[in-house]
Image (cartoon, rainbow over all chains, first blue to last red; front, side):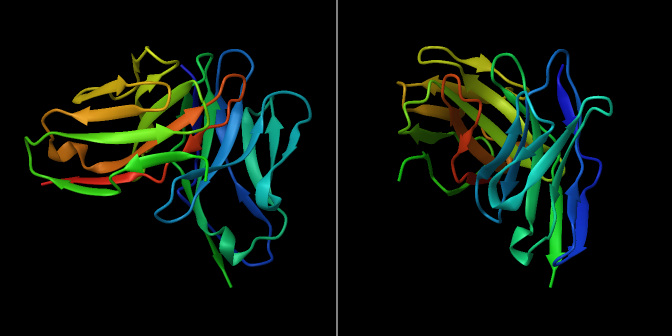
Length: 112
Length: 112
């Protein structure tokens, strides 16, 4: 079965500092990986995905993610965090029938 | 605006009551999904419908039934609600060849 793990429940950073949210995956075959963000009392919004190609994927709101096959990781990054980036972030992996399996989520708090 | 519409947004049920959560999408997507979100557990797939006329169980289907009424609508029914079904429920859809999910804004259900 395919799965992702998010080892950190919470990440706290100061505004302007780099932000990293970690994700590791376990799949058979080529991984299709995703990041979603959830703001309070809202549904999930798509940030970015890795299907194939370049290991560095750029997405919405200045976020990017680095795919590392040897470390089976897909960490989300932002060079300079904003207070408005405070939210719940989910990593996900897709199976062959297009179902997504989500990690437990990481709460990001960016302090002013 | 195009997207996924869920109703109701909030609901309180007594143990043993039944109810149906409604979901409709206007993006002509083939696939639709129901997830539940619980703290620390991420999103777990309840049922999905890969195409009109088909439904399949996900990770946590017990206590739920679904109906894919047509291409637009995918409903989730709780026949006899239990406190363990207190959760936030999200409907999502995706199109053929596009792995991105579009999520509804969720239904917050409390069973007392």
